[in-house]
Amino acid sequence: MKARVVGLFVIIIALVLSSFLSVTAKPIDGQKVDAKMTLTYIAYTSTNPNTVTLTKLCTQAGLSGNPYPAPTVPETFTVPGNDMISQIRQQSMYYTTALQIGDQSLTGFACFVYHGERNKDTGLTIHHFDGVYYIGSIGQMSNGFAGNMQMKIYGYYLTTNPIDYGTTHCLLQGFGTFQGQTLNLSNEFTVFGNVFKDMTGYCNKG
Image (tube, rainbow, N blue to C red; front, top):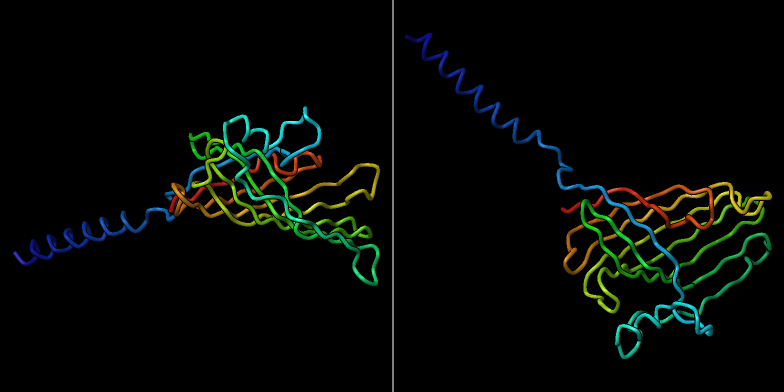
């Protein structure tokens, strides 16, 4: 009788442990989904009437003006005592955004302000971007992602090619309907025009 009771107790303990382990063994990244983003440059405005600009898109959409942050006034200078190193601060850039999160295809517009440094001796260029990625139709600015991005370019104009290769990485936090989500994306490129093309990674939905 005692043997049966002990055996039953062991079975119950084993079932409890099995149930506990099946719960605690779930991967912590169960909310991660694949993500991909490509940014395409668009001018804020232009003196050329044939150029498609962010301001023109706003006007064509019936908006009374361009609601996106206006361009800042950049500063460019050479580092004192070393004319091989140049820097730029507060440079504005604008992009159309194509974002894929899992099976969701999203579009919008990104607004950046960046600062950077170029070393003509080593060929290394580093740019740091603070950006807001507004997801939605033109003029919709309540939902999206915001955060930092870093771009590194190696061998910049040290050879006959513009660059040897480069990397881009961004970490963005969601706001509005994307609140609580995090985008972690990066890419590598060997063509200067592909700096922000096909950045891949994941979206952590929290």
